[in-house]
Image 1 (tube, rainbow, N blue to C red):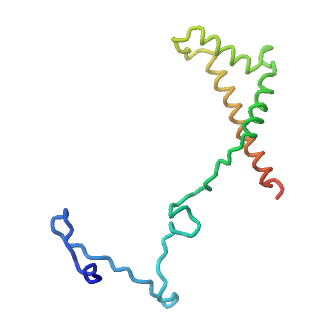
Image 2: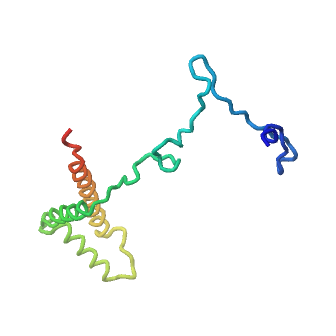
Image 3: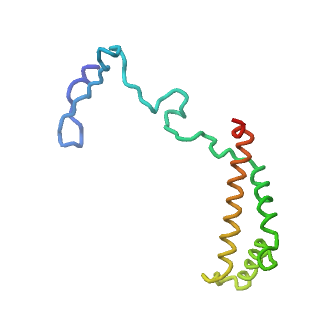
Length: 145
């Protein structure tokens, strides 16, 4: 059986060309042991089933505390009436109501709705990002080092 793999064979679909088996020999050098073989870097012990991964399996480390505190942490400052006596949250919700008044028609590109939408959500996502960094950094003692 071993000699059948070592001899050239015809592969169907390649027009009758013969393909010989690639000889896999151990590395030999005066510096290396003669029995040392090349290892597959993707089949390292402890890896996830032979698959190469760059991140931990639970890289997000989702925690509902971060979402809750981040949302409250953004709603509080965005509800301060600082823009002509109105808050950013109030202006955003007011613009939603204005645009829903003519519902089948989408908001115009010049509508204030887009400004309040982008500003409010940008602030929310920044607050959630810093909340994730701070909360997880503290629970994992990152800032103590």
